[in-house]
Length: 146
Image 1: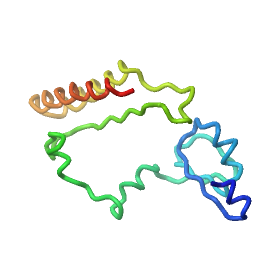
Image 2 (image 1 turned 30 degrees about the vertical axis):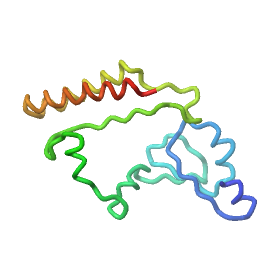
Image 3 (image 1 turned 180 degrees about the vertical axis):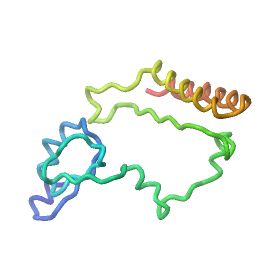
Image 4 (image 1 turned 90 degrees about the horizontal axis):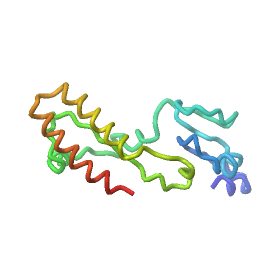
């Protein structure tokens, strides 16, 4: 916690990528030595702010820490040379989500349909039909999301 670092005279570093957080700006940022964000972060957090040319999520995919598992294709029923899209929707229940809304089910389904159409223009009809079936299964998973 940056507050403890400030009291003890130790530097503290915050890495964030969520711009709409209000409590961090008041409770955490003032005590931090440095605040790091991806370069796409629009807010200017002052002279402590350091922007870097990447995304936080890419750190998880570094070859030192991540080994791809080709068995995932079998588990999902996807051919290794098949085009696919992974869509991740959040529940919007985190503290920093209070007062914010996500996509409604209709918008999620429209996005899935648009992506299916885009992919099917680049694949054979058979593959597009298979993918369409997968999107229908995905609809049930998304629909059960809280």
